[in-house]
Image 1 (tube, helix red, strand yellow):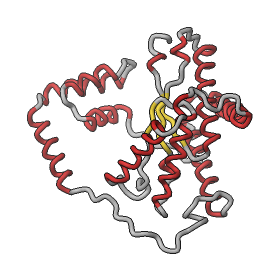
Image 2: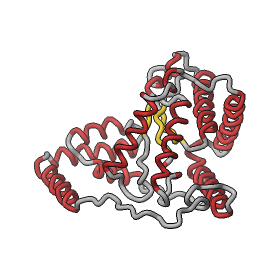
Image 3: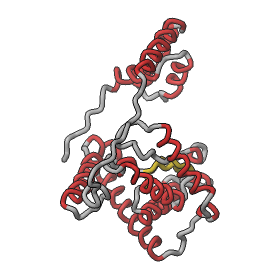
Image 4: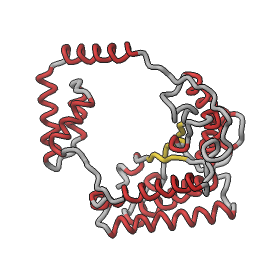
Length: 283
């Protein structure tokens, strides 16, 4: 366990509920340390450290009054930093509409830079430590998370729960509750169900040059013409063989990529063995 656990890391989202998000990240660290030490017997302190990247919640961005998303992203990024993230991605304000424009992407970067260089929030490891509100929320989030973990275990573990549609059902129920709250007005979304603009400003989304697609297609054709396709096929067959048994698929997969197989070709090789996942309808 201690040979590979120190290399593990996670990917979290940060929403606009600042205090709850900070509590979520703190609860995650508690749970990870406990599980690694008491369930898996880790002894290396680095195995018990929860390392995570955070991305701000694109799902909370709105197409209406898109510049308001700058405020949302700033709050979400602030919550992530206060919660102890090691890495941060801030979404662009126009991502609810299209791919980010250069201006929008630059402003997303500037948001991180303001947090890093114009505030003092990075000077303390855990700024909310001792806060009654955050400590209580941390306890609540940890308890709720452990209850969900118990439900997964009762269903036979993560894979069995996925096959039963449990996680998908929980996500759908949560999404339904959020949307219902927006539609009945019990949950406010600025610019959507309250504080609407009398007239929306015209927004010009990013337009991708069609020539980029043609250029990429030509580059792919050149790659396939120049590489040793016999070697590629041999490595893709090795990927399939590993997928059919119990061998670690990462080793043949790495060799296939080294032989210049494309990501799509590797995925097709795995699909040929494992098929395509079709989630169960549980909603």
